[in-house]
Image (cartoon, rainbow, N blue to C red):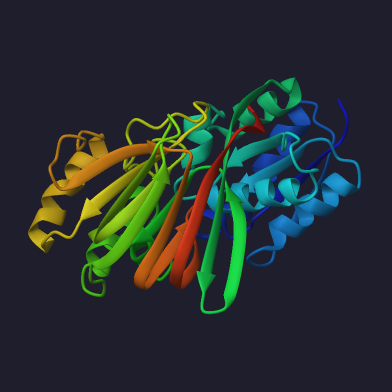
Length: 310
């Protein structure tokens, strides 16, 4: 096979990336993968490295990290891909806290198995999401492979980055309870295009809005339990403004994905949605906070635009 570019985030999984580096190198060598390694040193660097790698002729770029690293690599590949063409394929070595996209896409979770998958080069096509947000006069946009969280979920993400000693589900559970102390529901307006092309509007006070390309986020929360990576649609979970005690009772349901019938939650599918916010809201994209004060969002699906090694 051709040489691949491996982009390693040493800080992934609260430093697990650095601790796992030698095991990753041995696994890639054992699988017969020829590779060049680059390490990131800060947020956003994996995007630049992936873009440069593709421009330099690397067909496969491997993200060694968590959901944030995978998302950055996907964004870098997308930047180097002409409009309308398929993005990828990235390979994934899952060493983060959640690894939600890799698990839902079917990427092997063990490092040695993932290295073998990269050597084999088998891929699948999935959908890609695009999100644009405005804060003041500044408008930014990026792609996402797994999910976008708006409002309370964005606040949970912000809190999770302040917690240094936990990983996985325990990390996000603690972040949830911390977020409860700082976040108040907000009024939003939704204008979405459904799977049939119909236009729908909704205006109400909400706790949070979860956008899912896949079913899972936060390392074990099935917030959009019916989402499929390759159905040409995005799923949205809208949680109305509810008291703290109701949030606590909902958590076990969300972790099992059994909350669809709860009256406080509305689950819908869409092709694109516009969300003007009456007050600035925190937003995360694939587990990384992108704004603490978004005033407007536009989110759309790009069907079948991402190819990933599985």
